[in-house]
Image (cartoon, rainbow, N blue to C red; front, side):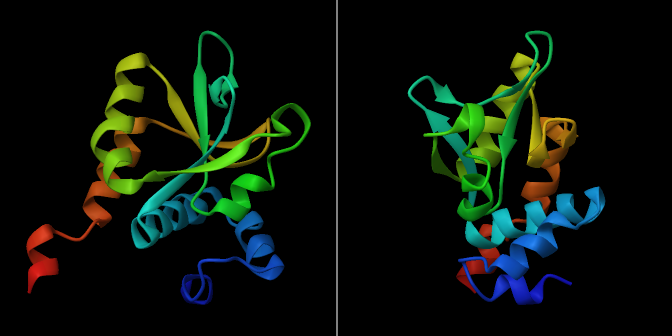
Length: 140
């Protein structure tokens, strides 16, 4: 389903539009697949740290599988933010566990504030780890 997007690290406008039109389930699967394939997750950061959505009672970290998708959101209150890559190994082994401990959630490829796919960190951790190749498979 995502073969045409897998061909290139840099997304075309057509590919970006395709991602924007995905259902939540397809977007979630795409995020996991692309994060593992390209070995990184993207967030937006300013001088104060990584940007967040939500209220004091429920904080969400917005993340994207591609730099271009993250940079599309670097406007309005996030103008001037830079897209920062988080290595998927570190993301899966530390970030998601720490987010869970702090009661934070994440939102995948937010388009607008009220149109967000919000996910629990441990669900994303489980699916990311299960999609990652086993170290022994890389040796053979």
